[in-house]
Image (tube, rainbow, N blue to C red):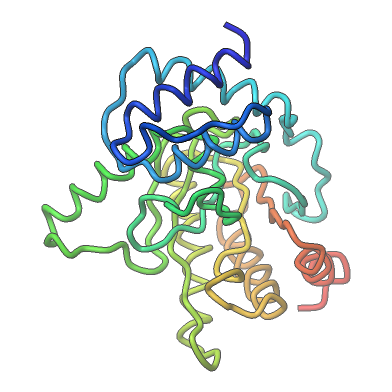
Length: 268
């Protein structure tokens, strides 16, 4: 089965799996079909899927990721003390763990084709990721009550499935709704400390951090970069042999400039 055949098969399978979109009209062009499949995956609630469909989904996603180009640690230069900056799509990185900026429901983004990192990671990992997140959250609800939501700065570790990374660390960042407070800054610090702690505990020696909380959670980008670089530097001083590489993965030019200013110019 080639990639075009996989795409057609998967669209039919996900349409059949959906009550609301069984009769969805599918465009003829490849890009349109890819958008339809991603949207159907995005909106799907966590539940089991036939093994045949999962296998074809996995084959399809792995080829898509190969087409995008896998980035290895050796492709990313070190700036200082095993710290790097890399600008691009985090789903391309072949590292021990990538960090996902999650929401407190911890099930991924359900908005079709949304541009957030949560949506992108769940899309290219495959639907197994949402299922695993759901199982972990259900266990927490049994322990803490059915209204449980993941607290800020408490990381959750999952497999990465079809992504090049080994694991995904999902974490809820602080939400800035008014003035930036010291408590919010401490919560951002804890996001990075606790993620590095879970890496050390699980022998994950390379990690790529996204820019936690600086998107829709409204944490000021420049201030975040200053806090994050200092937090990671301080942690690495405490545990100098724990990590082979810490990568600050940025998507916007603005964030790259802020991180370069903190690291390359050593202004902290």
